[in-house]
Length: 159
Image (cartoon, rainbow, N blue to C red; front, side, top):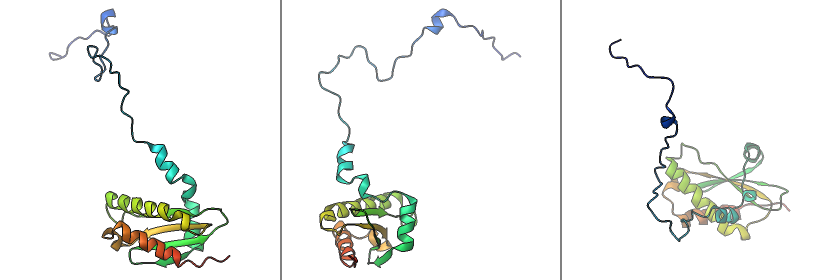
């Protein structure tokens, strides 16, 4: 018991009122007349590619894989299914087998942008799911975009 120190359990009034200063607070600094910097505008991205243009649930993806048709290209595979909805929707399935997270995210960004740019010319009432092949890693945005449009052009949509 030689190394133990007696510490009282009751605190003094002075200790209870101590306040730690916020690490970002500096009382001597004058307030700026400029507003704080704004972050990245998230709402603009959502308007460009709204949630209604995406496949979101597991059920939708499973229905597409079981009932849909597959078109295979050099860099991507495209599963498609005719639906009764008024617009074409996009889904992306990129597993960890494809590569590291930054490679998967790059592929998804490229395909979303290609889909968004070509959306006005696409047939309505389709669900699309894009899967990458290993060759997609070395493909440029233009090559992926052309292949996506080429595969969509092959779709024989019954009226």
